[in-house]
Image 1 (cartoon, rainbow, N blue to C red):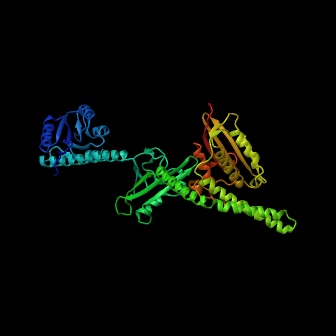
Image 2 (image 1 turned 120 degrees about the horizontal axis):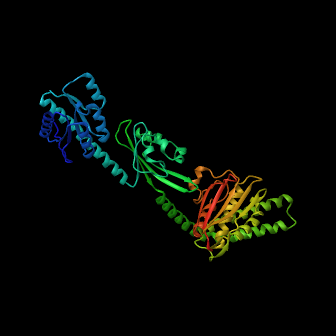
Length: 485
């Protein structure tokens, strides 16, 4: 038999019996096995002791002066949930035995049992209590370790239900932790995750060796981008093994890597553009001038004039592409000045109505009365807004609308450019502002990269979501006002 004493102290035994001699004999047997007994002689005294001290085992007489032993068991267990209980009686009956078992008694023993049999039963009860105490301590230690870890950890059992979770992760598991335990994994993850795929299915595939145990999950919306690194670790080799799901926040690291990568691309592109800019722009300007000269002569037929016009258009497109590359790669722009955003937006709207992309479409302007002034480079602001408005006009259908609005709240200025087109595809949102990403059949894919670069250079930011009024895409540029609030 395993010794009852532990490093946490001897097992504490509460003996409840109005027969003082029998109680003393049981206490002596308990002490002989290294246990620590305490005596009570009625129900009231037993409850008073249980409220004051943490007992491990209770040995209760079935007949007490002020109650019944099996009823006392339930009262004691409500005070001490891990308590191991025994019932002793001088009158053994089937009904009493069944009543004791229903109340969760570890054993039902006759008082006239042999001392060796009685002490062995007490020792087994003490061992059970010791194991419960150690298990409780391990659970507490396990919970403390889980809560101390910085990573999000979630244990999924063999049925796909959440067994435990250490702390809330707003992007992956946004709800209350106590509500998550016992629920299917897919029921507690964020709706944005659930809409993309079933993590429960992935974990089941990892358990069977049918899917990689590590993956990256990108969640993008109008409030920004969240990137999570997920790792699923089965705790044993069985088909129903519990799986530990670990989520690490990678947003800042990957965003930094992407900015470094963008900087490297910019530096490479800058060197490339610098070497070829003059070699391309000067010949293009000459070809365009010669083509227009031929157009103005009386020689070409109407069909030739049409072809020459197309040549001029192609040259202009090549010139625009080269301008995009130069804007993206240019390390700096001209001096800062105080800019009235309402004036810039109004002037841009007037010019935009003459753009080819505005043909058959309406350009609307909605300007708040509050003054909106910033300090920045005019070329940056004009490039940023022109790119967004041109994108909106291209996205709008024939007869559609593009709208520019300006709002100010305190020091925060927001410029919104929205359209009534189809909006941005959800799978493109996380990569929308990366260089060379586009849904168009023509163009460099640098327009929105230039927008982001200019917004950040002005000390602001740019985000995208769906327009609540027009239904298409809405790009919002947040800037800091220079004037008084």
